Image (cartoon, rainbow, N blue to C red):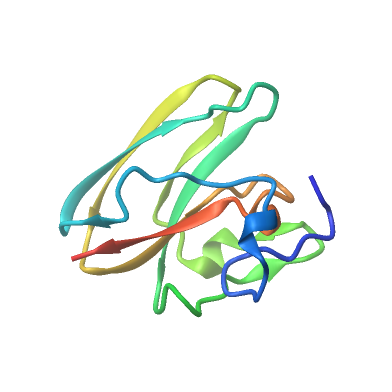
Length: 123
């Protein structure tokens, strides 16, 4: 993991260089109950998945706390999460989502800035 990486959402970075990522099987879903089935496919790193609303999926920058090396979840509008998953473990989260854009990301220190985020459109 690169502690100086600047691959957080809304940053002009070359995401092909990201060392971490969130892989979604769907990026557009209908409004209403949405269930996230989360798998930590890492062999040696704990991850989590947090969902927050974003106004513009292409330009949004989440409120980042550099002293903590992570997103300020409360300021970002935290809607729910699958807490720390050990390598190889799974979890799920069901939310009632309204139409709009959302970010999903890992907020373990350093992971967000290393590219571990994705966006989803709810229609």
